[in-house]
Structure formats: C-alpha cells, structure tokens
Image (cartoon, rainbow, N blue to C red; front, top):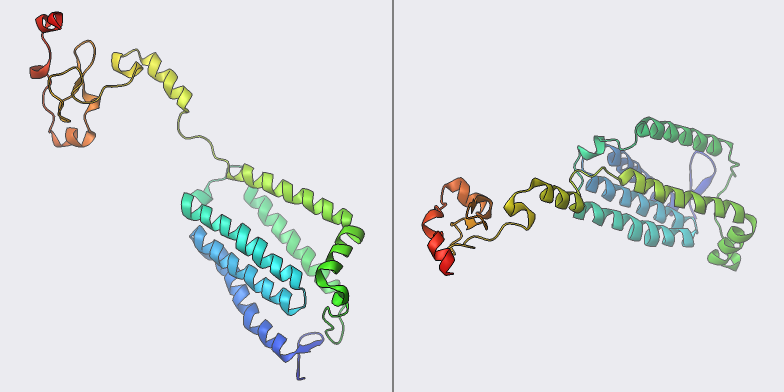
Length: 258
C-alpha cells in the first residue's frame, strides 16, 4: 500500500486524498458561514461542515461518531434550526440588535480563548511516526468500547458536559427572547373599554347593520344612530367609494313603529 507523508507521521493514500479534498472545502464553508449575510445560507454552510466532520470520523474508524454526527447534529438539530429560519424568517438587521448587552465582546473573547486552548492541546499532543487507526480499540466493537469508556472512566466529564448542554439550551432561549413590541390581548381589551365610545366596547358592527342597506360601501350605524366609518374597508375609503348613511337610517317615527 502506498503511503503519503503529511506534517507528522504518514497515512494511506486514499485517506490522504480524502483529507486534502474535503478539508479545504470545510475551511471555505466555515469562513463563508461567518461572511454570508443570510442566516439560511450560513446554516447550510454549517451543515456542510458537519457532514465533512462525519466523513473524517468514519475514515478514522470512528463509525459511531460519524453516524451520530450525521443523524443527530446534521439531520436533526441543524435541519430543525434551518426549518425554523425558513418559517420564521430572520432579517440581517435583526442580528445587529443585542438583547443582552456585552454579549458580542464576551463571545469574541471566549472564541479566542477556546482557540488558544485548542491550539495548545494540539501542540502538546503526542504524535506517532505512523497512523495506527482504531482497529485495536474497536476489537470488541466501536459502540461497546465507547460505552464502556464513557460510563466508567469518563462518567464525571459526561455528566458535566450534560449540564453544560442544558445551560446552552437555556442560554439560547434567553438570547432568542425579544421584548414584546405589541400590546397583549388583555391590554387591548382594557384600552378598548377605557375609551368609552359606543362602538369600541362591544366591537363595531359589519357594514349595513342598523341600516336599510347591506352593501359593503355603506357604513354601519351605531346604536345612537351615528355612522361607524371604521366598518368600511380602508381600500374603499381610500378610493372614495363610500355611500353616505343618512338616506338609509331610520327616522324617529320609524324607530317607534319598529
């Protein structure tokens, strides 16, 4: 089997070709995710980065991580996030509004710290002259080996990360919360009663009510006989196609007869 030398160690030619073909695309997608203006495009680029990571996991014999990356993160979490963006819609101007003051500098500082920590860990990692893969570790099965290590040696770290994920979910809810721009239904009801007008308390009648005509261009009459102009469509009002209500009102004599 031919070998292709990398920076440290060596790897097989198919794996090296896969890396040099997919890694630049993943880096370009990650950079584009930060530069694009539309949130939907950013989510699609992030999905591509996740798929690339899954391919790398599978190539390194980490089958369980690769399948979880595709099914859970790309297929469930990321697609759900994408569907929400497409249904609700997010304008580019919305991302400039900070619901929590100082979150952008804190996020930048945390990203720089995490990047420095990750760089330090990679620099201190022990490397071998040849890549050995996970064949020895997967002797009893990839899923079984992960389960044994996760719930015995790393059980405390697993529980801590679970708490961090819950905290991240609560933080996402806080960041997504926005102040109510419109009055609540209760407040609208209170304001309507406090106005004191005859038509505002119980709601306005439809066109033609309390009149001798049921056309949509005839304003309704309130119980005191005054026309309710708001019962006419604003389009008809803008066009000037409103008929006066006086010819269709009941006189006092007619009201007594009724």
